[in-house]
Each structure stands twice: as structure tokens, then as C-alpha cells.
Image (cartoon, rainbow, N blue to C red):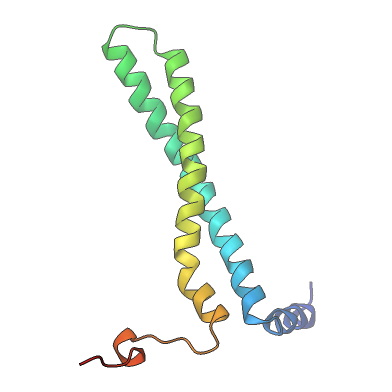
Length: 111
């Protein structure tokens, strides 16, 4: 890939409306957070459930697999949540034409 092709691609990306660019950033953040949270959730819950069943004197293998599956689902949920929370400010700024950072200045005084 040449430098001119990269520059042309960057210019076309900058030409996107702020709303579309914010949605692309939202999807990127969701994918990154989910890719991180799924394995972490699976390992943590597999260890938690497997350890609990091992302490109880029961076979831990099947229980650990169930814990890993539930951890993966929890990782998907928390990954999507974290990606969305990380993008809230950018989405608000893209949706509102004038973003008010200070609520006290925006609200009228009621004496």
C-alpha cells in the first residue's frame, strides 16, 4: 500500500459526517471491549464454579465448563456495555449541534 493510498483513505474517512464516524468508533470500542471481556469472564467464572464444586467434593470438569459458558455470555454483555459507555460522550457531541458542557450555564435561574 502506497503512502498516497493511505492518505487518500484518511481523507475520505475525515469527510464522513460526525454521526457516522461516532458510530464507527462505537462499533470499534464494542468489539475491542468484548474481545477482552469474553475470555476474562470465561476464565474467572470457570475458576469460581470449578473451585466451588471441587471444594464441595464433586467432579469439577462439567461445572467449570458451564461456568466458562456463563462467563462468556457475561463477557459479551459487559463488553458491549463498556464499549457503549466509552462512546457516550462522542455520540452526544455528534447528535447535538451545540454540546453544552456545563449544565448550570444552560439552565435558566429560578429564584
